[in-house]
Length: 317
Image (tube, rainbow, N blue to C red; front, side, top):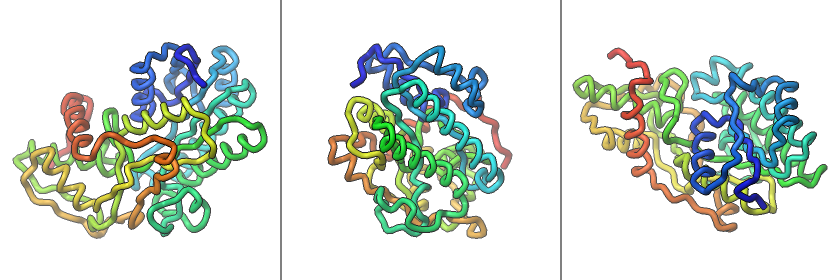
């Protein structure tokens, strides 16, 4: 088991997920957290990654590094979403094996599961049907990472674990309207519409799909749980076990932001997967459960957004 002097490398520490994990580790008193920005260490370059591991010798690796984005970004850059994620995770796996890392936590996404899999999504549904076309490139890369963890456990008897979180949100999220996911995009749209005299807000799709959302601090807490326990299996879903329609999400964000204008649904735009609710019983049965409910989490995220609004470009209505 880890101690507060364990050398823990957090790949992707500047992102929403990685920064939340670092905050959690620091709050718990860990003082050997290894961090490298993408400018300092290109995780797509195998020789650079191997050199870094050789010099720093991390004992635990948390892979929160990935190229991520919403439907538009996945559709626009399929090759990058596939290959860059494959390179990042493969280089980290190889270095972890070569330098005898004792524990590895690989972070993926609920999009690894088939588009029309039964609900809620169980871990055993992996590879039982076609993927959602709007994010299959990213999903294929993450599925490869999950299977790599499984293979490493089988061949090397190492405690490599994959965590598949549901849709995440929270501080340091991406609020770029061209590349962001649905919840942060809505926060920005409703805020800027409110500031523009409660202008109408146009949202993609029908509003009918159902989604589950997990605050990134809860994911960090789940990662910390995994670090402190030997996990009996290689793959665990992480979520709340509760979902809502995109329409209800929009109304909730509208309430939190104080926007009072009209909501317009653009049905010419894709909805994506009809529903993605995670079966989280495996991790719950081991003793972990989320703490932050959705409205409180959105309020927390909105406050962070307003405090950092100068770093976001304003849209024109």
